[in-house]
Amino acid sequence: MIRSVSARMAGARMAAAWAAWRAPFVPAVGVRSAATYTKILDKVLGVDVRNKEKVVAHTDIDPIYDRPVSLPATHGIPVCRVALWSFQLQRIDFYVDFCRKAAFHMGVSCSGAVPMPTVVRRWTVLRSPFVHKSSMEVFERRTRKRVLFVRDSDPEVVAKWLAYIHDNIPVGIGMKYWLHEHEPLDIGDRIESALKTGDTRHVDAQSLESTRYLEHVVKRGRRRLWTTYKDLPVYSRDAVAQMAGDIAAQLKANPRANIEEITNKVVMATRPEKEEKERKKRARMQRGTAAESTPAE
Image (cartoon, rainbow, N blue to C red; front, side, top):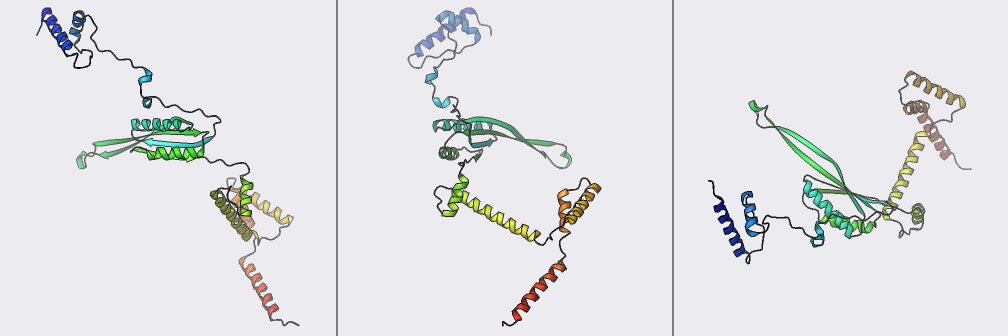
């Protein structure tokens, strides 16, 4: 239906009168109208009634909506690395901002978040069996990952920060972290002194346990080496030269062979046979029995 200009002007006056009457009851807002009535309303009211974006000062915005700020690292010594992953991009980005803001207010130098490559997995299944086997459907899952780096911070504060973000982690986000422990240069002397004196006040219990386990492994390895090589005879120079010649001949025949296996096989071949070892053992036992049966003078 085509409307005349006078009818349009009358409609514009009625809309302006209604807006003026309603002004005391509701906050003044811009009038939304079609593009046809915009110029007419501007002429009647003498003002621009179109909606405009309101400019808000930065100081009036809640700090929770600001971008996270990171404390600068002084020496760049790594303390912790946190890996996060989720299937929802918006959720993981929100949680990363939460972690960085918590680190800033706790005095932890946290940098990131570094976006890692997205892991995409697809599964193809049948829509229907039998004659509809050619109709298939593909399902996809995308895993987003982010990494945070913590440097030049107190380990105790970092542990509290990790506990805080772990307690407030939302559903649908996975977290894993790695801690870097730094020891003084004289940690070896401290552990050795603690093992001798028994004073473990200045040494971590885990370090002592690791040192004891390492000593146990070394002793066991020495016993095994001694059990393996104690029966080897004392080689002369000619015997060593002959073994070297055998090893060189085998390597010449097969250049791709493992030299360690060949050397081990050649050296082990010079060990006395089992029968010879048993004969020596019986002889020692007989000598011991004869010494016991001899009466003392």
